[in-house]
Length: 389
Image (cartoon, rainbow, N blue to C red; front, top):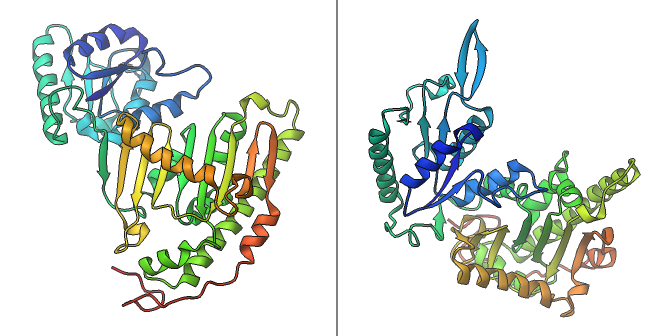
């Protein structure tokens, strides 16, 4: 398993001692080289780490003095408390272990929570309890004790794509590299176009974030097939794809206004801090959805028996190098091939990078919105608009 370790700087020695007890597992101390690269936001790095580890250990020591209701108390460092809350929200309380040293005051919400006491004279009991905790984690994950097999390279996420919207949103707004492929991108595009804080767009302008998005063109011959598989009329799916074109235009409008506002400000923005955002339409069958954020891919399957939004989602980590590269290779292939004229330069709808301000391909947008309804067969065994269960 991969385990994150957090402590104050003053408690780093205790963290090292606990790391030795975790021998056989990959540990990531907060002060490990590369954990928080220069020029990055620590919170974004913490969110990324929380998605990549299987468990975490936090040292609650008597680091700071505070006054609480007319009495002086000792309390853990505030950032350790914040990090515990972040990781316990991601991993669950069973996988976020508190190691308490001394009588540090902690929030009342944590009163009664079982922890490991690493105070002086209790080292032997602490070793036993930590080993017990590791053993239970292995049973829960169903992994081998061998450290190379203990990491979860591939897992099926609970629920379906409708249930995972919050996860998609969080990852999209915290990652440095985002690649999204789907039949339609109305949901993601609507969110970006309606975000008053311009979260993702600002990160593209100021934080070198790279975003690529692909959806199926309303003119694609694949529309008829996927509509029948989804249990809707081809015209219904085609309307959804035209909505994706409209939402792309809305994203452009918001992005252009933001870009122009920033450019007018004193100092504006530095081009070396800019990332890129590009949205393309393809004529080709996507086969499956891809939601790549940094070193993780959420891989959604399209089948003839189930609507895309109700299909299973598989998470693949970069650690599973072969499968990870195969999925991204599929994305890159569609990105390079294009489709409308087999020339990728003719498939982009929106583009912005350090050398080009937000630009909308107005001719292509107008062409896609003017595509005639494909009509076609009524979906078998399904009434108009009814979802297939």
